[in-house]
Image (cartoon, rainbow, N blue to C red):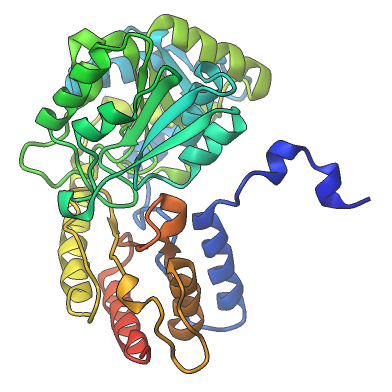
Length: 401
């Protein structure tokens, strides 16, 4: 029997994660001896700060070896509640917090908990690759609203309001954004919030995983801090990016208790509580200090300026100025239809694959981010690697005529 026939329809309909797929291809080439520079995966190149690692070692010695509570240890949930009040002006109790196995898990939990088959989820594009696939798994319908390059890829409140229908259940976006690095200002989020306030049956999922990697003078603003829509906003965050803890797999939601209870109910049947040792480490991360996080942010800012400057020297590249996160997201449509004599570039998928084969630089095509004219380049790498990668890209695209 065919494997495709045997798999469930929901799995056959699911796309492979573009970032993980490209990372896999890059590793395969590296295994063959090629000097691949992988700028595809969104992973800090810093080590987890020592005081956080020390907390994990202490947890092992203290015997935290058993199953953890489904929603997370009480001290971690309190630390998250304290962090939200301190950093985000969001006041929730520990009972409003559910800890999951990474922010990705948290996002999927919320979508599965809230969205019924046929209900619509408005997604601000460009968006992180898994958003629309998670909606698909919940049998919802993704309504993609495109942020214009000239508006730094940000969706306007007017665009958002025009996309609302009687079937709209949820709107989701990330700020700072993956893949564009765009940051929604307080004024922009308040305007979006005013629209949400007119629709009490619409919920907002605010992905704030890049919160600490924000280069704007005003800093981060959380839409969940707007009192009029507090009960309609689900804030999602974690430790992966700001604390360089990707492999620890700790994320959380903060929401009205009935939503948190629903997520806990779902999680209790699927994964139960997340890793006990990682939770103890995350408790220390959320309680501070943030010195290491700010040092990492300064490095990402330096790299942003370096990479954007180098990419803007490449003929045909249109590059916005990211206000956060650690990505560059150039528009490379200038090269569509061009050829090196063997390969003709039709779209960003072709461009990204050609670049990997030609220059041994791994990027991710913008198609899976809802921006088919662009490619995502991670700047979470050493300066010398970034300089070398940009030089390879510049030299390679010069062959396309």
